Image (cartoon, rainbow, N blue to C red; front, side, top):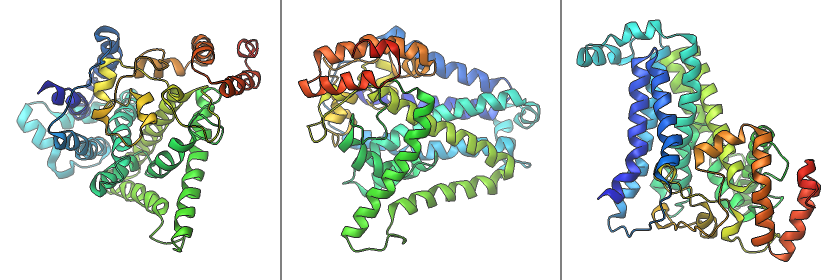
Length: 385
């Protein structure tokens, strides 16, 4: 039973986030501290998970993914309630009557600093709960319900079209110069967030345009999945504005943009500096991998990224740990933090890239790696060229 329950840690953390936002004041920072302690400390304490159990009741695993949508909606509702001028649906009165804690008064006393923490906190929560779950679901192109739920989850970070570019673009072009999500050697994470976002949307539009032309359908029509993706985010924006006005919408936009940035940071971590010859098969060594236990459970085995790219259509519970694949600096959250300090990131990644060049690269990839080092703009990398 535990092999199923372990993937519910994400849902528990979402409930903690909903509770801490509802309670307001310093409880917001407390919720954020719990989140960081669990994911950062957990990976450091509990080590790796390299088990690959068999799952008989796979429908349970799918329901766990679907649950992310109502939880995300509830989380956004609570955030809107924090900024609303009224007690939406008498939510505050209901919580106060159950708990004996005056959440309406706490809402009035919540400081601007706590709202700032809330942006960072909720952006990360949505980035994990909605974006990563949406990633898994949108790979299930054979399950219309899963695909629809996945796109709605991605729409909370204005990125429903990730379902187009990622599945049909990124997985085809990963670790080549044609992939917006693969950061070349020397690029810092802040530049990557902007570059990958812009090029990713352009790529999604191009992919969808080509699909419609093949089917002889109008590009500017409801048949266009990219346009429908933007419309999905617009629906959420209108819902938020209806609930909480301009203040709530301003918060939501900041949170959503930060959640989108977290996705691009994760892309950066997963493929930074790796190279592949165009038209050569995608293999396990074209992604950075990690088997940290807590990250794996919280992210539905996204951490087993090497196998995910080697066989992109496999559901998360069938992914293998691939301990022989190139490994990240640490778990997802600890690696995430390191990316935000570019000098430290480049210093720590240099020996890993040197090892990759010497132990994983094919002869053609080795030449591409040397060119990438020369073009990196970083002296330590250029010395290896």
